[in-house]
Image (cartoon, rainbow, N blue to C red; front, side, top):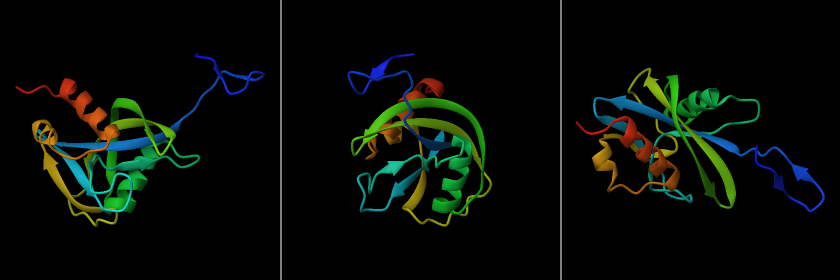
Length: 146
């Protein structure tokens, strides 16, 4: 493990980042994205829905809670298929992308203006946060065009 020094006297052998989660719903060759409401650093950007893990919560539990809170639906969380790192407002995060199954398609949006299904090619022209672009890059390797 890498040794990180925060002072010249105390070495830290452990470093943890805040965990952020993203749910990746797949329907044929399309993926579910949600358009954030305006007013935040990533407002009016498309994203794979999800959010930060709270204290004592697993990434899977965080993802289920975020879908309940922000989209008003239940999901089944599957395999983690990608991860990456990003910085937002000077804070470092690690993002985990999980395959998910939607329990229904009847969304009640609280943090988003709309949801839509996009192909990976269509995503290239969308405004997205860097963290979501990392997921798109991973998906291109996992779901190559036929």
